[in-house]
Structures are given as C-alpha cells and as structure tokens.
Length: 439
Image 1: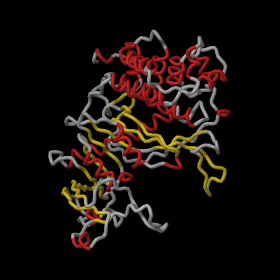
Image 2 (image 1 turned 120 degrees about the horizontal axis):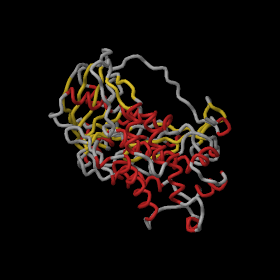
Image 3 (image 1 turned 90 degrees about the vertical axis):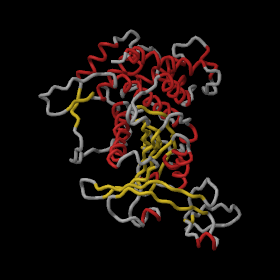
Image 4 (image 1 turned 45 degrees about the vertical axis):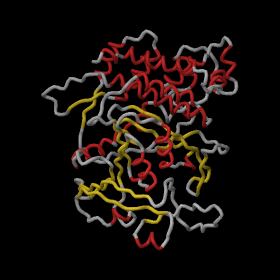
C-alpha cells in the first residue's frame, strides 16, 4: 500500500477540502448564511459531514447514529442555508488534493453518460414530469457525470431537471468547465453522436474521444457509405450551414441550424447545434469490429493509429465502469433513499454521494486482495461493503485505518469477465419517507 494514500491521509484530504470550501470567501451559502455564525449545534462543517456520511435510514435514525441531539426540523432549517454548490466545490478541492494515478498509455480515461434520480413527488418543481403513462406525474433529476473509469472516481457532474435533460449539452458544459491539463480520452455511447460535439472534441486541447456511433440508415453520411465489415479507416468531410450551388457541387454535408432568428421555421424542420464557421472541414478515424454475438459495433475516434483495434475495443469496454458506478450511487450510496424533497436538497445528496464514492474508491484501491492459485476466479473488493465500512470510518474521528483495510479485504467478490448471461435487474424507484426501512 502506498503510505501516502492511507485511509487516514485520504480522510484528512477530504476534511481539508471541506474546510477550504467553507473558509473560502467566495463560497456560496444560502440567503441566511449569517445564521451559521451563531453558536449552534449544527455548524456548516457538521452539516456537510453529516450529509456526506448518511446511510439509507430515516432522518431520526441518521441523527441518532451521528450522535447529534437536534430535531428533524432544526436539521432541515440548517440544511436550507447550504447551497448544493458547496458540495460541487468540495468535490473539486478533494480531487485537487488527491491525484489519481492510474492511466492508460499516459491517458486519463473518462466515461460520460446520463442517469435519472427519482425524487419525492412535487408538481411545482421544474423536475416534475407528466405524460399519458403516468397521469399523476413524478419528479426526476438527470445526472451527467464525467467518471474516471480506471481510478473509479467522479471528476464533475452537470445536473438537469429530467424534462430538460440534454446529455450532449451537458457534455459541452463539462468540456468548457474543466481545464484538461493531461492527455484525456472521453468515451461515450451512441447518445453523444453529434457533428457539433465531435467538432468541439476535436478542437479541445489534450482531448481525444471514443464514441459509439450509428451504423444503419440513420448513421452519419460518410459512415453510412462504409462496407459492413470489420475496418479501421479515416473519413473526411465538410460541414456547411448554407445550401449554395458551390456547397452542393463540393458535396458538403448540410446542417440545418435555424440560424436566421427572423425566419419562421416549420415545426417539422429538423435542426441541430453548430458552434463553428461554415464551411468546416472535419476528419476522424472510424473502427468497426464484430462482437461475439455476430453483430458489428462502430466507433468514431480521434485516437492515433498507435492505438490498435484490440486496444480500442478494450478502452470502449472500460466505459461500462460508469454503469457500475451508477448502481453504486443509487443502491450503495443511498440515492434511492433520499432525505430531502426539494431539488436543491437532492442535488446536495447527489454530490455528497459522488464525494463519498471517491473517498471509498481511493481507499479500496489501496487494498491488496490475495488470490490463491487454487481459486477458480480472481477476486476483487466488494464495493458495497467497502462503501459501508468507509462511511463508518469517516464518521468516527479516531478510526483505525489499518483495521479498515483489513476489514475491506475480508469482503470480496469474484471477477467474471465476458459474462454473457443477462441479469434480471429491476430498477427501484424513490423510497417514500413513510416507507423507509428502520433497519
């Protein structure tokens, strides 16, 4: 184990991140921030630590377990004074204090995807959705994180009300927000196939992309022309937002943008984002390979030819790590057992879950699992138990870091690569406050 990454060191890094955030003069608390200056039991720092370490029980139980003798009403009133952006800042500070080291050929590998978080019903909220299938309606927020699949940590996240969810727009926001100082690969599924997004990725320094694209009749024109077989080729084309005779003669790809604000467009007119000059030349690599099922998969990438087809397949397969991370956020870190009804409260808990996910992963990554030659499978840390133990360790001021590592090492699960059996997983909705388990 790296002595610089012991559980106590990582805990101190997180607490330093909290302290730096709260002491930052430019911090963003709520309108009643001055109330935190009074001698209260629930200080800003104590509120943050409590929200970070909460489990899935009732609020009364959480306060009792934390040894905090206040009413639920007092907790909610104090919570209302904290902006969710405080937790955004803590995540950034924590990531800055702890440098995750695992890379692939010198690249950080980040996956991007979206997932919905179910909330208590509130028709007055912007997160409220209603349609023929659910006449009573429901509330959801859509989370769009950047996730480091090799180090199993969240880099940042953009949260949207589910009715306005826009995964491509969220990734554009994350591209502009984050300063990518290291070589980085961003991997995404077919929902991120967009001329405008690919152009942004091509223009961004230190960024390469690996995105699954369509390969049927709805595919990009130049990809649609490619033969349906395994291949590795480069395509080039030019995007234009006009339809002049010259554009047509040059066989440019026309992109409707509704750029003329004074023009009345038909509701049937399809249009897309475009943030670059016209015409705009674009080129990137396309790889296509056959899966074990006999079907093909097509990826668009800006990676150089030094990355072989097998390496690209491995990199894209690593994207699945973000799907596993979503399950941990919801079931192991409690996002199906939220403790607040307001959108702002839910955003607090989303970022708190990501911070504790990073905390737990950074500790679990240091645990060494001994795999015996007699074992049929290779074993890895059981993250559900690791998260539980790490939360307990974080809440205990004088926790034993060495004992924590030994305890995590006791709980393992087999690694089953290339598993093909479909698992019957049913998504769970928000657990109502009156139905919260007492255990």
